[in-house]
Structures are given as C-alpha cells and as structure tokens.
Amino acid sequence: MKRYLPLLVMLTFWSAPPLQAQSAEASAAPAAEAGSPQKDSTGVQQFTLRNGMTLIVKPDHRAPTVAHMLWVRVGSMDEVDGTSGVAHALEHMMFKGTPSLAPGEFSRRVAALGGRENAFTTRDYTGYYQQIPAARLEEVMKLEADRFANNQWADDEFRREIEVIKEERRMRTDDNPRARLYEALNAAAFVASPYHRPVVGWMSDLDSMTADDVRQFWRAWYSPQNAAVVIAGDVTPAQALALAQRYYEPIASRALPARKPRLEPQQVGLRRLDYKAPAEQAYVALAFKVPQLGTAAVAATATTAAPSDTSADDDALALTVLAAVLDGYPGARLERALTQGERRVADSAGAYNGLMGRGPQMFVLDGVPAAGQSPEAVEAALRAQVKRVAEQGISEAELQRVKTQWVASEVYKLDSVFNQANELGRYWVQGMPLDASERLIKRLRQVTAAQVQSVAARYFGDDQLTVATLRPQPLDPQRPRAAKPTGRHASP
Image 1 (cartoon, rainbow, N blue to C red):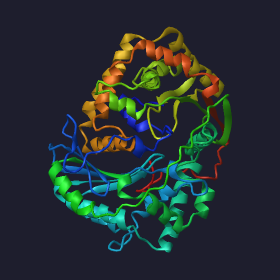
Image 2 (image 1 turned 90 degrees about the vertical axis):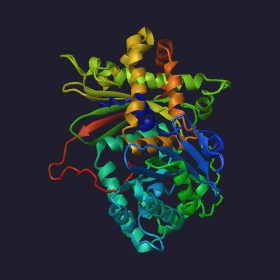
Image 3 (image 1 turned 45 degrees about the horizontal axis):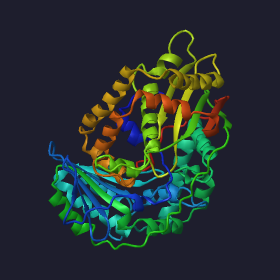
Image 4 (image 1 turned 180 degrees about the vertical axis):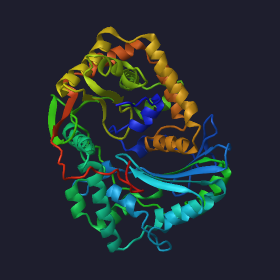
C-alpha cells in the first residue's frame, strides 16, 4: 500500500482509538470561559459557552472563505450491543429535517450559499462541516445550531434512510473483500473494547434498528457540553464568539450517560483467521497491540512539569517513526525490500501506527503477494523487516528524513482551512491542547534511533499479534463488480 503521507497526517488520519479509565471529558484540559479565552502561538482561541459547548477559532485571512465544523464526542464506541451502527445512522438522519427545515433542505440551503458540506462518523466522534464564503458564516451557524438542537423527522423518513445505510454497508463492506477482512480482524483482535464492532454496524442490527433507537441516541449524546464548534478561515475570534453566543449558547444542556471503561484484556497468544471471499489477489494484515500517546503527556510538554512515567508515550511516538521508516516515503524499507527486484514477494506492502484515540491502538503491517508468492511469504518478509530494525537499528539519515516530513506537514496543512479546522477538532476530541501539533513535533524531534530500535524489538511478538489472511475464491462472472459508493453523508 503506497501511503507516503507526512507523519502528522498519519497521526491524525490513521489514529484508531485507546481506551482509558477516564472519559475524554474528564481527561481534557479545562477550557476557558468566554471572557478569558485560551490562546496558542498561532492565534487560535478557545471559548466555553455558558451551556458548556466549546468554541475554537483559528483566523486565516488569506482568502475570503471559512470552514465551519461541529464535532460531537460520540462515535461507534459509545454504542451498546444490539444497536451497532446507530451513531452513523444518526449522522444520516441529521440531514432529514427540523421543525423549520424539510428533509434535504439543509444541504440545498448550503449549496445556495455557495458552500459545500458533508459529515462523517468514526469510532471516536461524529463531525459535520461546511466550507462557505466568509460572508455566509452566520447563515450556516444558524442552520447547524437548529439541526443540532431540533433534529426531527417522521418514522417513514427513517425507514427509507435505513435502507440507504444498508446498501452503503453492502457496497463498502459486504462487496469489498478487504473491508470484510478488516471487519473480521477487528472483531478477533478486540474482545471487550467496543472497537470490536464496525462503525457502519452489523447488518442484523441495522435490520432491527428502529427510529426510536436513533432518537434516543441523539437525546443521550447530542448535548452542548459534548460538542465543539471549530471555525477556521477569514473570521475574527470576536465575530465567531458573538455568533456562537447568538445561535449555539441558547441550546439547553442535558446530562450525559456515564462512559464505562470497557478495557481490553491483555492478549496472551497469537490469533489467526482466514477469510475466504471472491477476489483476484490474496492479502495479509498483521495487527499488533501497541501503547498509545497519553493526553497528559502532550499537555505537559510545554511546561516544566513532566508526566511521572513517559515510557509508554515515548514508545508510541517511536512506533510512529518506525511506521514512517518502513512505509512513509517513496523508496522506504518495505517498498525496497518486498516490492522491487526479481525476487520480490509483494505487489504492495505497508505499515502504519495508531498513535492516539479513545480506544486501544494497533500497529499494522500489510501486503499483497506478488504472482507466485503466498500470503505466508509476505507475512514472513514483513516481520523480517521489523526484526532487521530490532537487530540493526536505523540510520540517522532515515530518522532525520521522517522528522523533516513531520515538520513539513505543518506547512502543508496551512494550504487548507478545512484541514486546519479538522486537525483542531480531532485534537479536541482527544482532550489535547490547542497547540498539540507543535508539542507533538517537539516530542518527535526528541525520538532517537535507539528508541526506534527498542520498540521494534519489544512490540512485535506473537502474544500481541492478530493475523488476518484473505484467501481468494473464484469470481462470479455473473455478478457485476461493486461500484464505489456515492452517498454524500456516509462514514469515511
């Protein structure tokens, strides 16, 4: 798999969740009241409205455009067995109306304002966004506040939409062998963690889901103190605060359900599964349980105080560097060793590390066997490359290259106000400070080659490993290949 993304993008895009005994609300740094906003060195300001909702504003006046995002700290990990997929179903239903908006009217109005909009559901959070001309910010905030507080639709509307969601599952998962393999991999790797369940939901749960299941989930979790509005672009903090106080602050808060830890028990042996599906090529994925970066560790980097034990945090960063050394740029180790030359074993090979999230994290190695090669050969070759790092270490040149990429990503992200807002929202979900990216870069620069070698030696044994192998079955010539989903409000 050719990823070649800057390290900071890897960090935010691939982070799939770490379960903590505290809820994210409890671990987050306290936000400032509206009269005394938090600030960082780049001009970002954070406010807390009287109802507990967070407002984060990042001015960027290079173009007359604004990205407006609403983040809700709830995702599939907050569901209970029997209602998997309800967080994603609610995301769909948020476009189906309020007492003042007909179904679909929200999207039509944003388009009429010259904007684009969409939404996404993940394990950790749900997000809604619009990118619009700066002069239209007030209209969008009014629309978003209305549907957050007053989501309303008829049962018939839900019955139609749940069929759309089931078709989305068929196209994205059931008709995609690799997606089905990862669904089975997560179900095997995670026992107690809610990451055991797919974001889109099991089909049997979708079949039995009711309109009231979705309404109850909305009433339980869509409360102001569980949400943040993030605005980046051609706007001033004072302007954004005044609008937020007008449209979001009147929304009444409700008590949130208790978040129980549901900690994943320690894995004590290798887990292996074969998945048979019609496919043209085999595929293998190796998922290792690894530590994640703690919220407190990031918050402490800019102060004289340090966490009492930073070993797990240091290891999480070193594992992220290891992933980049293996597969972070053209010509990285896996590409050279597995996919090139006459004796190549793979058509593609990749590595990524889940650095942080609300649930447990994994380091994944994967590959597609070359013609005449087996998944077992690819598995062995992937593990051999990690073993080589464990035994021989990495060069300073490799280390400096990935660190330079991370720093460069700070420049790249400024090209898009959407990316800036997206990053701030992701960090808010994790309870990170406003300047988390700067602090993470500071910590990354401190990672040594010896640390990378050490984690390669300690985290890639059988006891923390789950291996999933796709075993291709004959393709049915009578069955057309699945088309790429085109739904506008599907989970990513």
